[in-house]
Amino acid sequence: MEPTGRLEVWASENALLSFDGRVLEVFGFADTHRFHVAFTPVVLVGKRMVTIRPTHGGQYSFFYDQPRRGELEAFAAHVNALHP
Image 1: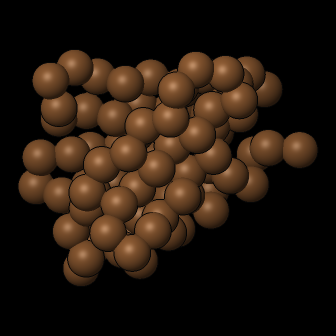
Image 2: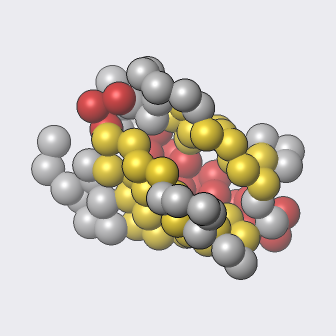
């Protein structure tokens, strides 16, 4: 899969999600979390938390700011649409 251009969205003032078409990254916590598209990471936006579930490895969840929900849902839809 070819990169589709970088897409970034802030989940909170200290959490940034970035996707370049190949790797989904989460910045702003103790360490950066990276999920390659080969592991089909699914991004779920819940009532209070974002959860990323890859096919292999553990899921990752974190709180987000409610006013950013719409942007996060659009980001999730973009990432999730790349999966068969």
